[in-house]
Length: 92
Image 1 (spheres, rainbow, N blue to C red):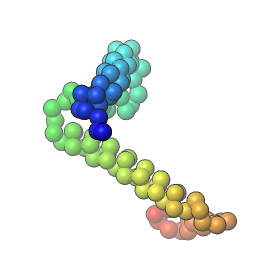
Image 2: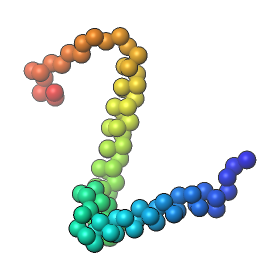
Image 3: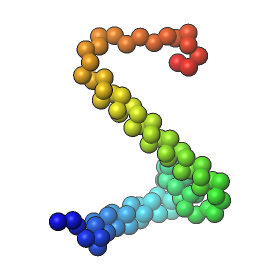
């Protein structure tokens, strides 16, 4: 049986409120990380270009992480004793 929307909300909403309270405390005490400052700027600004850039950067981080995780998952079972890099390549 699938969980109701209300039950799902009761699970994630308190965690979200708690996280926002922590972020507010960090902002008030000037101990916020760069990531928290960027998120606060995203939420409070009305510039669509900055919002699009913020979301683009989040998406890039997500997809790069997924690519690396998938790659490492694929190669972990291979019997590789050495990995070679071409240090002459301009993309290394």
